[in-house]
Length: 229
Image (tube, rainbow, N blue to C red; front, side, top):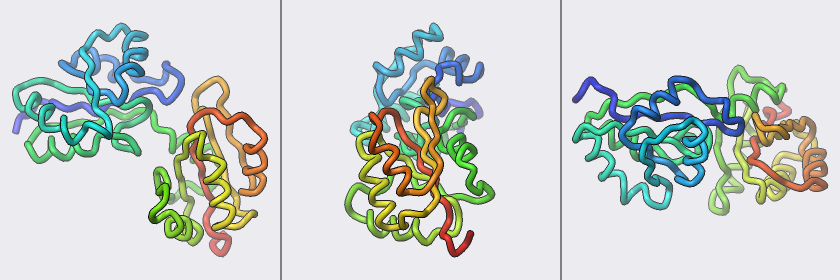
């Protein structure tokens, strides 16, 4: 096992391009290769910071095919930085498989601190943040009802992600499973010009977003069960 770090997991801005650390910029500049979820998206960020490192794609549809190739590169001395479209890799984004295989092969890894949507959304929610559970995206079909029931019974704050084209369905499902009056917070466009956090009941949130043109990725923070309030 080498003492030299060969895999850097690098968080990237979730909106505002200024939300990146000096260390992250230096790491991306000094890597031999950057793996990105979407190379077109990555090149906008890299161009902004004048980073000329070569970029290759690494996403959910090709990670199983590509992981061994990239592990081999690191074993042969190359340094790789892993990024996603926004935020910290491996958190509802690709990366876990590469990290796991790197560990198996004795490759030294580090993860830089940086942007992630769930923590700002939790802080902005005003809900209890002493303990919480992050569920990522809800199952689309199989297991969805069971997961909603589990969330309904949770005795701590629950955080989920949702896309703009599914936010109304998810709010409707939450209303059916948790009741109209459960307190939630819905944040979107975090760190961007039109950042917004709506706080209120599930019913009120559903009405509010049903009347709006839906844009941006969403983070929903859900209050604990009323029995535990």
